[in-house]
Length: 222
Image (cartoon, rainbow, N blue to C red; front, side, top):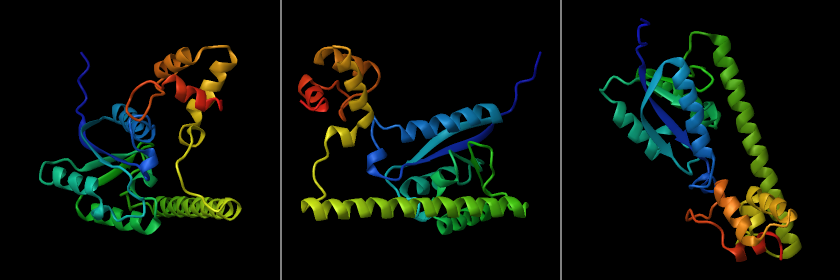
């Protein structure tokens, strides 16, 4: 009889960077959890607790995050010394916050491991440290580029229309749902049936209910 493998206890950490990624119909948190769970299953870890920092910037120091503070309180003195994250950017996107956070965890005798198996707290390999820093700097650069791009787009819209902010339409809030509704409409499906099919596929309102016919109509631009 094969001996049962002893699992190493770990805690999972999930961070979403903006309120737009938070909610029942958003995929960021579930995607991160799935990646962590898959890795834990194959690498011999048992996730005994989950901690989440919704709508928290990756540039925020880890000690200032409520979810991570709760994580530190949870593991203190109970033997759990491994934190699992989807990737390094979920831990911290800003390079300085990432390095300072890793240094803090190392001093506490903890390890932070990504769903790809990278141990971010491993400092024996200079090349791994350098690559981690390079990856972090590119991630930081990409985030800064995206922020600048979005700001430029808002500025252009404000100049053209005199305003930028305001209530977003369905196409902005849920482009995938709108695209699917249009595909179904092309097949001659009624609004009610489109709503039912969207609900079956997990496309629901913020309150977790199917979209009403009038909402489907607006999605189709009618």
